[in-house]
Image (cartoon, rainbow, N blue to C red):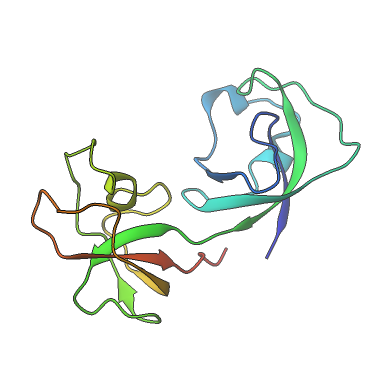
Length: 149
């Protein structure tokens, strides 16, 4: 289900993905609060359409202002334990990983997913990008289903 919201002009490109982090301190008293703060916190979104002719509005958070876009929730790519990782099943992340240089790190600690949550697997994507897990985990790269709002 798509929503109309205001986002920073630097993010306002078709296909751009972001995780909505909620209200910032600078949002207090803003006349556009209702149009900006209408998404679900912690959910990953993709910009589907930048509203043609929408004006850029001043913003205390985004230095170049905000503009109107259409967004929809999208699934998160993540590494999960390979055991019982099937499309349609539920899985959770294995836990934090200190190896930030690993090519799989962004999938072991993906933006838009929490360690203490179970997520429905929409699709099995295959092997993770790393050759060897430095924590000796057997992982599969999956795409979680988008969260319902």
